[in-house]
Length: 410
Image (tube, rainbow, N blue to C red):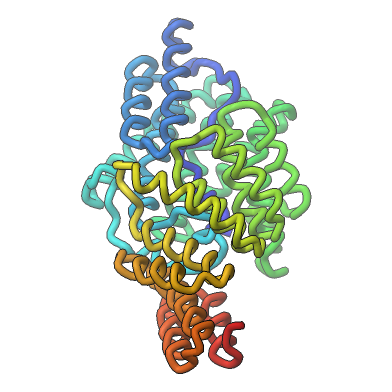
């Protein structure tokens, strides 16, 4: 459940359409509108991978309207995503079940290269301020906007605890509060489909648990219902407002889990048009096309994205080049372009990356060896993949490699 709450590409936080000024400070309308515009600009920058510029825009928003909790929460969210970026969690595959432990083990640094302690201090300072201001807002007025802000802040406490601290208790407590606050939003204003993202996400996730776990979740205050949960997320993705992009990124993960690849690719295409500087969207498109069994489409997306990478001077995620090489090499293997695939995959091994990624590269190299008639070399690669992936909790990789040891690749 906790991996879904991370919503792999939630570069910034959940906002609200037409959000009202916080009554805590009651800034003049012009200043409130300026701060809202700065927050919107920061979100667009963040989704385009311009995180430093996004943080600067949120900082300006805080100065213009220091009483509104959103800019503090968005800053914390951007720092958190920067930490995951440094750890190499960049596509839906990172939230489909494999290699979760490695996300927690890698040394934590902030997006500007801060040491872990400095990053954590900045993250907590911003998020604590968001909780404080939103709580004060809720005490003054029982409004949908106030509860939305408070629930969104607690939502990021839950995702941080899950993805950085590895704390189940911290996740449960914050997640329960986020869920309750956004259920309150829906009770106060059923038209606020944006609040359905957190509620729907937990409903969907809980539906996949075992019966005893579902019962425990119900006792903890969470509702269930897979179809209803997914429908709420889809409604949030169609609701015009700041939450829309975050909901769409969440749907990419869910549609991949559901093997609804056409729907996932449709959402990716919408986001590519909206955020053309986010090169990782082309990596996601290629990876999804591969899962759908469409190697030619995958190659087109990946070649376009690789051209973006070559001309993009901005920092890369940990192991990002290996991820591109793995996906591109896998597409070429499926197309039986053996020499080009071998070159791409070997180049991927030169980029330090997570063990499960190297394991999957080794599987593709094994396939190249099989296609070349080198069965002993193929078996060596598959067994190497098994060792790497087993140590990184990637069961799908291990199963695939074991099957290839037995029957080879045709």
